[in-house]
Amino acid sequence: MSAQAQRPLQALDLALTWDGFRQFLPISAFVVLFGLAFGLAATQTGLSSETSLVMSALVFAGASQFAALDLWGTHIPLVPLALTVFAINARHLLMGATLYPWLSSLPPAKRYGVMLVASDANWAMSMQAFGAGKPGLGLLLGGGLALWLAWLLGTWLGIYFGSAIDDPVSFGLDMVMGCFLLAMVVGGQKNLRILIIWAVAALASLLAYWYLPSNSHVVVGAVAGGLLGALWMEKQA
Image (cartoon, rainbow, N blue to C red):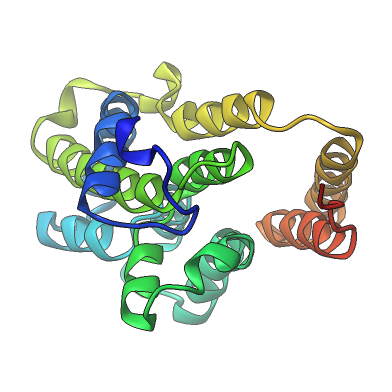
């Protein structure tokens, strides 16, 4: 962690990025398995190898890519597909909002370039670093690059060698990133404000899951927790 010593919180350079990349290498091993499951599922759905790899490279969002496979066919319903992917990935809007205090100091091209590789895992770790008074943008960019490369590698392995796994879900490969994010939440900042925000987000998400259309619970939970967090600002010391 020497690259982070005595640095501004919004600092981002090659050393911090490399440090973030190295920290995410162990996590990336599990992302390879998750990507393998997607590559296998894409092949079984009928996607070509090129289409599957391009989707993983440009979309880089496991949950929405799996959801897209459910709608894939001879005639692709573009509007439902777009709405489904947007609903699942809407949480990235709130991720960007929470990171803006530190991203705002970067030039626009660099700022949006960093957000291209933002995901649940590196967002959670970068926010945890900011909460501890350490630079977090290196974790966001370096960690995101590590996860992106692992996702591409996993997709490729799933396409060409994944036939050995008949049922990826039975191995829990669809739960890898969710479990990691849960571990980050448990290990993060703990106070009454954070507890209430998470509780409201969880309750809103459950109600939407029970009573609203499919995948809307992702948006509803994120918006409920995000709005409460924005309105109930933490007191500065």
